[in-house]
Amino acid sequence: MDSFYNGKAVRLLAGDALLYPVGSVRERRLGNSVNNYASFNLILSDPFTPDVEGYIPRCVSQDIISMLEMFKRVNESASARKAEKQAAIFSYIYHSVVEAASDRENTHVKLTKQYLLSHLAEDIRLEQVAEEVHLAPNYLCAVFKKNTGKTVMQYLAEQRIDLAKRLILTQQEELYKISELCGFSDYNHFSHTFKKVSGVSPIFYRKIKK
Image 1 (tube, one colour):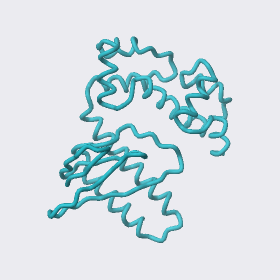
Image 2: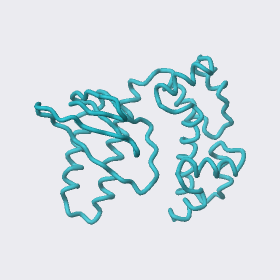
Image 3: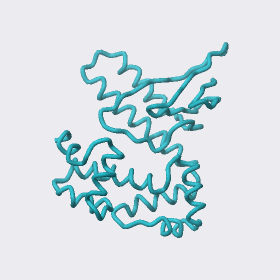
């Protein structure tokens, strides 16, 4: 099946997936052949920042197919909690796809992500990360951006904010303390980054999630 993702033609084969983030331009080209595929749109209540997007080859397992069938049944149901069920199923499918994609991810990118996630609370410098994965800083930046669509520092900021969200929901610590636990030495920088990544301030996020 041929699709277009942001102006680029993509030939989908059995087991492939396309994840369109908000704002993408998409189109499916109709043909004479029979195609079996699943397609759905979902609006989530919480801000969602995907780790992978676009064309993801060979990532759809039988387990994911079963979850897609469950999603279809929920969508056709009259359940009062349909939206919540759909969000939960989508989360499972999405993270399964991410795992499949990461298994084929560039080794240096995978090592970089692992290092960043293991040191979120620490002061992290790009040169330090590059040394850990045995690449020159400029080359690491190029490889990481090519494979993820994000810079190393953008990815780090998003992961720190994801951690902050979890801590805000589960801990009673003051926000300045949470910012420190997430690797921010300056609260104003934390607040600015939080709003940039999630669309709301940490104060407002705590308020609406109570």
